[in-house]
Length: 452
Image (cartoon, rainbow, N blue to C red; front, side, top):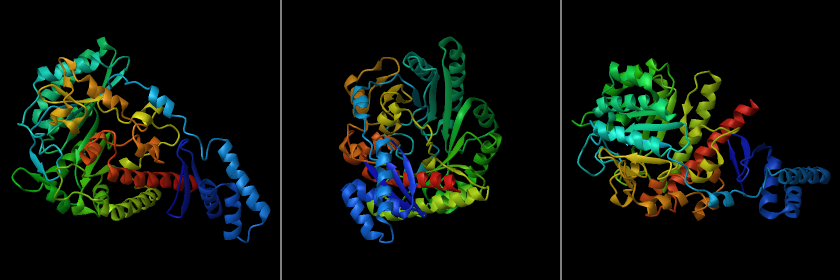
């Protein structure tokens, strides 16, 4: 299987199974498409008919080059990963999303967590539960040395003392356990102060800070609990913490909805006020009905991503570039084969912990009792559900087996797929289309950087 597309003046061909990428001229592009779709003889005939200025020997040589790439396994290659995927078993636990707070000091219109409460009563995690969660992660992480904890919510800074206590306990346990913890804090930024900055910059591997872009866009969606906008209160605080981190190891994470289909303006606004590590995610939660994105929005969203790619290239040349999370692409290494086949590890390598210590496959499943998997004291009590997530991979779904981007996407988000279709073994159709467009843009940027 191959994927051919044109973007920003480049003719790009991606071989699905080998992940080889080819940037070619117009004639070679057409020849590859004719050869891949219709076969060798048809390619010879179609190229001769379309490019009458070419000599027969030139056409034969061109097709021979294509055949050479095929023999090398760089074009029209055979997918050999299915057998590996079917034989795979769940890896040890690697990460916990620790919901230390099911309370929030904001009321965002698109919040998948129901303004922090996940459909239940607001609660804060006791330190005892957090300590037990750390022990559970150590006990179930096997031979892994590096293990991760993301402090999430609700708003985790509403339970800041417990966050600090959990980190302190984990640091004490590192030496005896042979583990190394990497902590991430995800926050709306309202409660950032000097203590948060000092502790976070000392202990947190990464910080994710929420901001949706232009003041009017941000304030329409990210409201304070009194109904006011949050932009003016948040921006100075997140600037201060980013400056204290020397502009590293953070992300500004925004969300776009149907209310700002022109989200490129929001990304550029965030860049123009001084941030360089950016992410902008589509709102896909089933609770986001008023501003929910639809398949009809895709043409405009595709344009926005393409314009973003071109703007990033321009700014990179001017030495004022920025990183966009969904355009990050490592063509020399990238995820290991296991990750490419199984995805994020939801429900197996990655679990979410509620303030009460309950275990869910990830934070987006919290509150749906059908997906309650156990707790940090008894461990996993629903082995059937754990097995279902273990089996979930790119070869368990027909849509993925027929997709050129499968070894980059790894199947997409399980929660989005379930919310969209009611099945774990399906895909979120809109998310798939957005991912493929972002991947096309990311590859184009790499091609452009390689030839200039």
